[in-house]
Length: 169
Image (tube, rainbow, N blue to C red):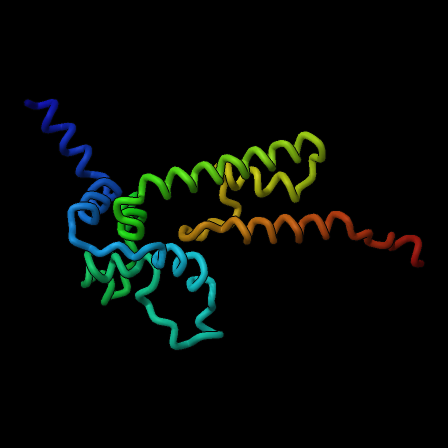
């Protein structure tokens, strides 16, 4: 009885678990991928460019629905764990998540094979990102393309020959 109580407390301690269960058990209607698209694309538009950008886009819609006072007070977004996928894809979540992780595994294999042939930063950065090491720690979104851009910038800095100052004198 004491061990069961401890396990229940540990399971409910994690907001991932609690919030995922809350979304899964609710009657929140599946968004068919809109939440993920908004989180990955719409979130990249700066408010300077689009000042009228709403606050309830992507997974913030879950905060607005499940934690309206946090949303209204702009207190940030708690993690919903796999509940985010469930809110987006409903009963198809297991297939979507399986496909996305399969795709991620294929990309890891691609960049690993490229690293075996050419140990360049433009292969290394996407590889370590896909392995779970974020070099741009913003805390939200899947920043794969930003890491590709970072690798490109580093590659250009490495490849550009800076003239030797002594030779110019």
